[in-house]
Length: 200
Image (tube, rainbow, N blue to C red; front, side, top):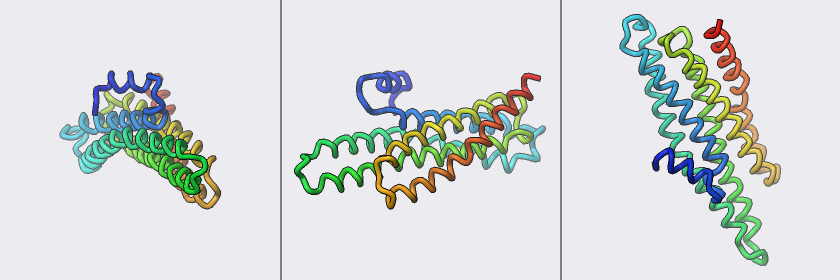
């Protein structure tokens, strides 16, 4: 992947992609990285030895999710570019409507995957309090808050695409999205609880 500075410059440019979906993927990657960091700073420490199986598992999975989220940054941008290309098809072409419909479904898939990924990151973050190094508990709170932001940001991008689809295409995608957005409340509650605990 290109440098963060270069990617952010591209995000802020006049180009339509990367855009909000790619930003959601980057946010999910950051959340996963924070979970991974907390697990790294917990595993191998005698004080938390009884939780080693859990933190070791979280460490590995968070790293996998971080890598997957980075891959979704380009997948989202690519799907959006392909969708935009279909709008350039001659309006007289009888296959134009079907091409746009297929590309719209395809464009909904990366942000849907981002939302599901961020929901899993939120679940991992929820496992850490009480099992992880307390000195980085604030990072668990930030991970939960950031995962929630990634879920919501990805959901916005899915919903934009769903609004352009007929019901038969929309229903299964909406069901998948609902499963991810169900994690929004718990992730926000975890962040708020830890924030209150750390500031008291």
